[in-house]
Length: 135
Image (cartoon, rainbow, N blue to C red; front, side, top):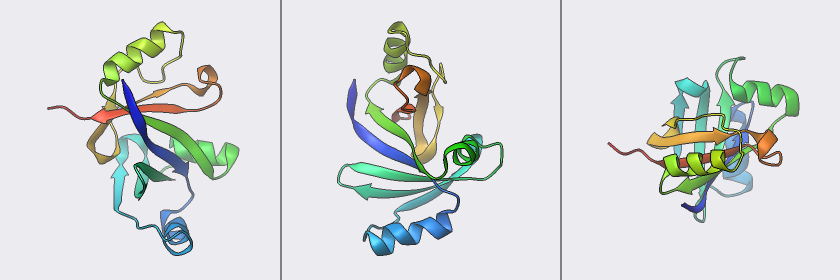
């Protein structure tokens, strides 16, 4: 079951150039930075109420984020929904004709399990499910 919007992913060319905007202009605090080698990105997180903003900087030209920026420029990349059962969410989405980018969840930032739905079957919005990793 989806419980909330977990975060909004925002593609940026440079964390070092972008973080000051969020801190100085908006008064937010960068709470966590992390590299996610499997996705070829560096991330920075901010909390706004119960929702996080995840800035995503590509670490390679082959990164999905680098390709997104090349095609669309910087901006909102995806919406992530927190779920209590990521496997059931994926199964339910597939059963309803949604194209899965990831059939199985993988470890993403902040130690969460994540999986993406293809924007061609989600009305143009790259959608992520995320859940705490269970041991």
